[in-house]
Image (cartoon, rainbow, N blue to C red; front, side, top):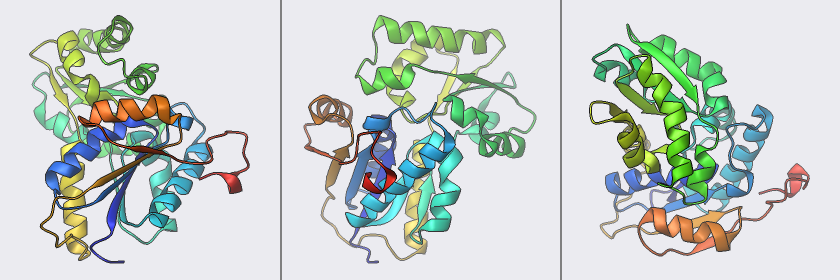
Length: 275
C-alpha cells in the first residue's frame, strides 16, 4: 500500500457524491475513485445480507482499481455492513453516519429530527448512536422512502420531491424539531428544498464535512496522505445504465465527467458473478 494510490468511495447511488465533494475540498491532491451502485439502489429497503454482499463486492472492485482507503458514503451500508468490511479488509475504512452528536449540541428546542432510510433507522448501530450522543435531546426519526429515487433521477426540486419532503419534514416540525439531520447521503442535494420546506429557523446538518476530516486524520496516521502537489483526478463508475446515470453524476459533480460501466448489475446473477 502506497500513499500515491487513490481513495475509493462508494454509495448505493449518486448520493455519495455529496461526500466526495467534501473529500475533494479537504484533500485536493488525492486521486478519487467513486462507485455509484445505482443498479441496486436504494439500499435503504434491501435486506441486510444483500447490502453486506454488495458492499463487499464494490470494495473488492475499488481495491482492484487501486484504492488505499475506503469511504462508505452510504448510511445504510454503514449501519449494516461496515463492521463486516472492517473485519474483512485491512485498509482504512471510514464510514458516514447520521450526525446525531452535533445536532444534539445545536438544537435550541431540545428536539432533533432525523431523515433517513428504513434500514438506517432500524439498525442497532443507529440505536447505539442515539444512546451515546443524544444527551438530553429528544431524537425523532422519519423514514423517507422515495427521496433517494428522486435524487437518482435528478429530480431535485420538482413538485413530487417537494410533496415528499413536506410529508416527511412537517411532522418533525410539528413535534418541535428545530434541527434536522440528513441521515442519507442523497439528501444533501435536496438541502435548498429542505430548507424551504422547514424554514430559515431550522438547522439542517450534513455530516460529510466531518467524514472528510476523519479521512484526512486516518490517512495521516497510516502514512498514506499523498505527497503530490498536483490536483488529484476522479474516476466514476455505475452499475446502473450509464446513459442515464452518467449525466446525473456530471450534473451533481458540477462538470462533465466520464462515467464507466460497472459490471454485474443483473440482480439474478449469482454472487460470484457480481462486481
